[in-house]
Image: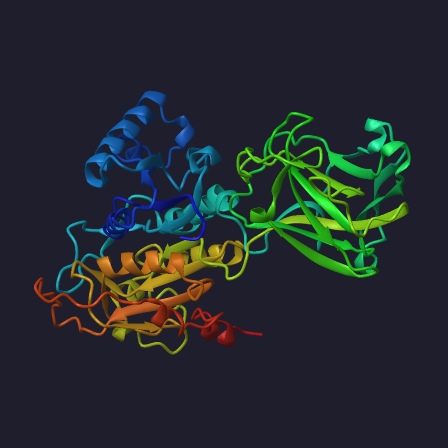
Length: 498
């Protein structure tokens, strides 16, 4: 899937979630499944008692019972997380270590549970937690729980100044005086010396080859806890070059004198530039020598940075741009980045119709029951839309899938993908599971919101001949037709009073 790690399936015991787990398993992908508290804990939730006030023995029994139930349903080969998206305290970040992709199939329960009836009578009442708690608060808690693990499209700022965000590190000089040289350097923050008068860090000094020296550097103190950058593909430096070649050294050990994973980079004199250093180009170096038997760079465990201007390259070679004397390198930021094309990190199963309850001029009599009964169902579609908005605004690369009415029919029917929230119809749960997994792998689905239905009308059941199954779909054909920024909210915004 491009980025290694677990795929987290939220709502894994539901109708769509089970199918997602089954199809991920067929692909041989590592899975974590988030399954919810049931039994006693659900009773306490129903009377709005804070999770923290539930007796510990009740919480424990609820966890054990629900884990056993999930194991029987999902199998023993996947890692289970027992929690509750409506309760942030049940979603500690350590549960989600190693998660690189998320498919959220959790949804508010609308009863009765036995499923669809010919007149869609299942849309009668909300069971369990409210739509606000599941679709909105639950989405907020889930995003907060996985954000660091799956990463942000705009990257992760590690040092520097970017818009209204700043992140400072404790840098100190580490020059060739440690081996008898006389070079010297400093690092300070220049509050107005950056681009357009903004703040920047400033690495400057005088480098000399006297006494067999020839390097100046600055190094951060070890971070208070290791930084996990495994959601990203490399480090990006924003700096004003001087035409010389520098080194960035990244360490994954708290030991002082140890291997540093190193990349050299050239700068252009007098120009602000962004320099990307892919993790794949970092080489293990110890005292300017390649360590051939060092383990590969581990982006999950970054503990310090070092920036160096040196006469020495690696393994006896020299820096061809090295010049003795004063140097100055403004460094406005170091951040982790995702390489292009960026693929989806968080797929969310929402619902067609989420923008329609408040759409002016719509004929509700021709709309599905959820649209007609939105108010009676505690504004289920309203809160689904609010949850979608949280994901769109989160910075996580996403895809939002809005199925029409879900059925137990097999996958395989021809499909209609649309945007703008206008279509009605049906779609099989199995097909939605396949679409979600495909959306994780496709750059064309990234940051798109779309509806999907089968071409088969409600009045006709869809079946598959086992002897002549339909061809496997290439969902990229559908994803490539999708456009950015279309959610169906456009009609609401155009009609809003000025």
